[in-house]
Image (cartoon, rainbow, N blue to C red; front, side, top):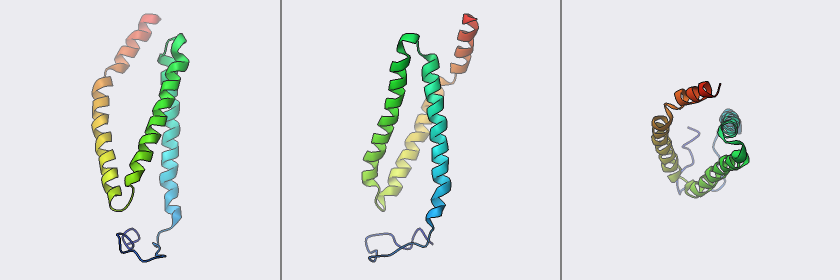
Length: 122
């Protein structure tokens, strides 16, 4: 297959895989769209939930988390070679799964609390 023809330390010089670069369009488009949705939603949430005096500070903190994520990605790219890349992606997936469960349990009642807060202010 195209993914396994040339892997490992014994790859001949000048070897190429027979997979087209066009296969990257869909994953990159999906990542771009998800980044847009996440950034817009996060900025709106940070701006709408902050007191008037802290709106710019909270927005800056949200954007700083984007910087932190990019730095983590750069650090993990050190281990992006074959075959460690599999372990990097597996570890990222495991951490994301655990953190998703933690996030759910921390914020599962937030919609109810937000509705009560909006009802109190109106």
